[in-house]
Image (cartoon, rainbow, N blue to C red):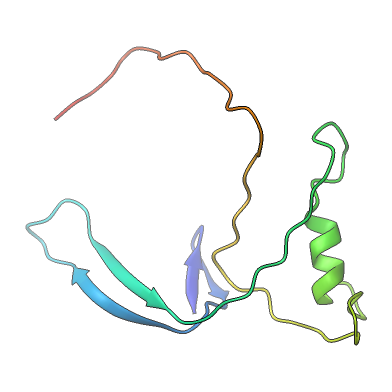
Length: 101
């Protein structure tokens, strides 16, 4: 099981840990993972609409009942879930304070 915002019940696809750094002397613990074959579903939506596209994908995999895909086959939603805005990048101002250690 994975941890998403403290919730310990999110399924994750199988992975092997390639490198693990967890020790009291290190400020940031991390691990490098190698995942097997995975499949992705994507949706394009109008950024101005109230539907973020999540509902469309959730319906496709069967979150709300019968899956709305070819064969009506339910699929598990696993972490990580990736959402990205495509198109021209949006510039943002750099603000103070900037802390470097």
